[in-house]
Image (cartoon, rainbow, N blue to C red; front, side, top):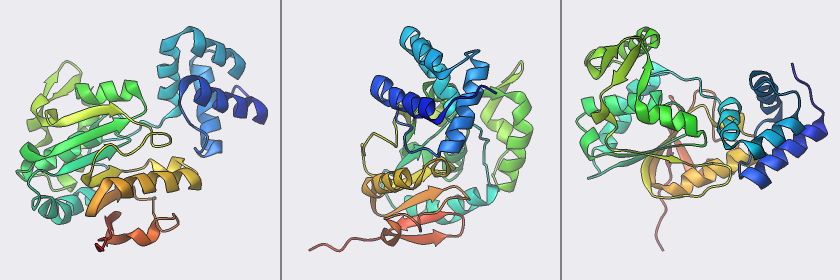
Length: 275
């Protein structure tokens, strides 16, 4: 592994912020160090100072680095029980709104976006739902827009879909061409994709539901507070926040502004009394 000192690490993280506007200051440091070491090896670069030089000389190197520093491991219908709860408990509430809006923060390569879109389609709600999918990784965002995945992954995705009590066959939603599954573009027609950083950016709309699953675990307490505060600001009263199985808001500054709605990590924003 490529090794570097704590001072080199701190200097590099500062450089990312000041020169490239990517703030990793409040990511969990041990995890970030491991991903930096992995990036150096795969980019065939010997040291962080050399990586700094590359980022200034080659604009494409920054996107490549962000691909290594952000976690893009995901699958469709991950944690099937979560999606059963979404279908049975959350969708009926979303249906009470004329045009519900959902924000999928940290959308990665798009498997989760399609999972939501398929279930919303099966519930007859996709046509009038606006979905905003954001991530700091431009390469992952492009993959999410394309909706094309390796066919070898579809077996596991299909098993998750069945366990999530899907009402059709997952293969109904994609065409198999060569070694790839190409998903129906109509599933994504109401999805807006955008680069957004939970560490530095702000609220951009108001939503009935926000999904940010398996992202907060890579943040320290300060950044978790910022992100949950941003979600609270962005939700309508009684709006839903969905987190990953190992994530919680009880230890954040906003714990008393949400109620646990379901065991599958759904939280509901408290109603604010007027006056």
